[in-house]
Image 1 (cartoon, rainbow, N blue to C red):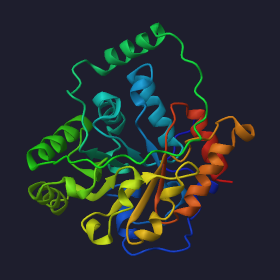
Image 2 (image 1 turned 90 degrees about the horizontal axis):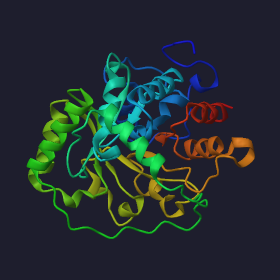
Image 3 (image 1 turned 180 degrees about the vertical axis):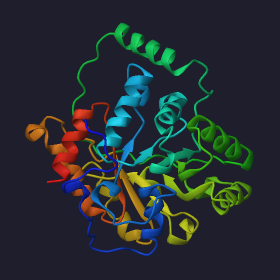
Length: 314
């Protein structure tokens, strides 16, 4: 594949939106284009992001890096990870790709959920062992496409203090090989889980530019009982959206001043439906529903990523 700085063609066309709620340009701009890139016309690709939850399921760090390089060459510039993804290896694998590209991409990671212990094995060895375990495991029956409505998660009484948050941020920066995070998301909790000192630390991170934007990444049903005042310090709401998540469809109207990032849009969508174009059409529909925000998707198969982008680009 020919290397280039940005994809051309339909996906690189200007992305004309139907509305732009207050705060959307400021919130999405740095996240879309990277921290040090000049302001430019937003394109369809700027409203997409790549989820890194499955990087550690690949056969080797090289395979992970090749996938990310391929996604980058296709024009995607926003990458979403978390300390708990791949039991801590997702951030490490993403860091290997980020070398020499940190100022060309934006990175989102999270806090509030972490593996019970940080990775101890080199990523290559851990991935080989993971592959071996899968080979030795009895073959599972194919899972039917999920059609039942998602269950609303119960409320939690967890409290996150400053010390836990400081340790999580430092650990993520070390794993990612960076001194700043473009988007820092509270993972599977609501703001009431944070102690006041933890909120102060987040504000310090943002004031010092070590964190560019703050957001929440939880099941969207957790936001339904919140008021706009509950989300005052937060720029971004990240949650599930699409055919399987009808209860979340009203969140754009409920919180119009926030940047919304959709994920899990393809739950219940068969990748083979309509000659393989159905996933791309669903993603295109989610983009149309969220013209001032972003849509995340993920795959360990670069051909599927390319096919989705082809459908989205028309």
